[in-house]
Image (spheres, one colour):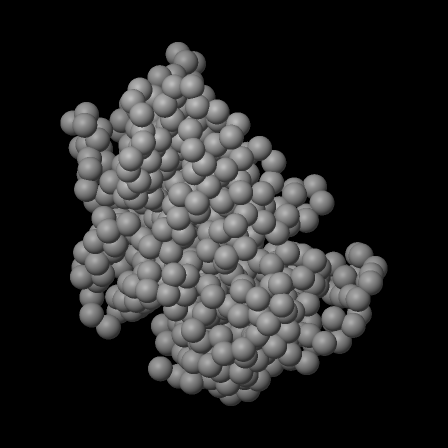
Length: 290
Length: 206
């Protein structure tokens, strides 16, 4: 394996400064839904201007460049230790170049490391070995404001009348959107995992966020749930920034997971409108960013 | 669009109503989680004795906050190596985390404008009526755009809190925001929360 540090740096730069086209298209569609001269419309116009300006200037879309979450799929026999090291060097360099804000804070001392390098989990790197010769790396920059409004429910939930079925899932997800109000930078994208344990469930909810905006779940019942949740979340009327309006969520991505007989977790990861995810594919003779 | 310059007179504050777009110019201070905890514990409640340069910084920020504005923001800053600071991304952070502190900070410093996103709660709303003051909502995530209104970084205090948590002194021009909590007891956030609560209940029953 060759050194991919420079490739990772470019992946970080792209993720922080250049919003993916499918996300931008859904923001444009949302803007067009809002009434002219409304606060919601004004917010969406500002958001879209900012997206264009960040891309042009090569500066961060949002100052909270979040937790860098990497999903690395590598060919057989590669050193994950070396890949992690290269990622860490790239993240520190991206911080020095002001593509990323220094965000790694020691929880006990309160000291910010200044370069986005904390313990093994900061930045977060997940590895998986796959067939083939390509290295595929997905990166999600997930800000703190939206991470704070994520929620996990254990069904049944008596207060919400939510049982252990998709109808119950629907109820708790709507509750999570209501509780988030505008605080997670609405209109957001929801990653929802059904099942798992408390840890794997949240992990699954983040993985769901890598699916493209216009890509529904292949299982028709989950695709239908995604559509229904998007429609109903928007009926809450919270709107862009919580100003009131037509679009509260841009989309919902659901993922089913296995669970214990005793447990039925539903985990919701709220991704802000600045849904900064990018993919890099590096092969023996090619390097592509998506 | 109402133009406001800092320091903001009471008369201008009382004129502002929920929904009004404003554009702010003058010198303001950033301050978020660590800054609010530090201000309240060290100078308002006195549960922690001032240490190091605390008193000096207090004297420096007091006149800036008197009639002034605080911005809940943890910026991306260039020039950290040279000290020639420039904000490249500076959108608002979620304000509700400062709810335990904000009202006291407003009262103590005669702070007129709190800028952030997501809105704040009843304690801050009461302080807005009292002081009087307003909560100004900036557009969350619009960091590159908002950074354009920061004309100059005049200084920084408590850089040891880390870049996002430090108290940055800024000169801004035409900083864009919307009034979402006014000095007459109105909160857009309380209103939207109540409406969405009713919508949620209908959906859960359906």
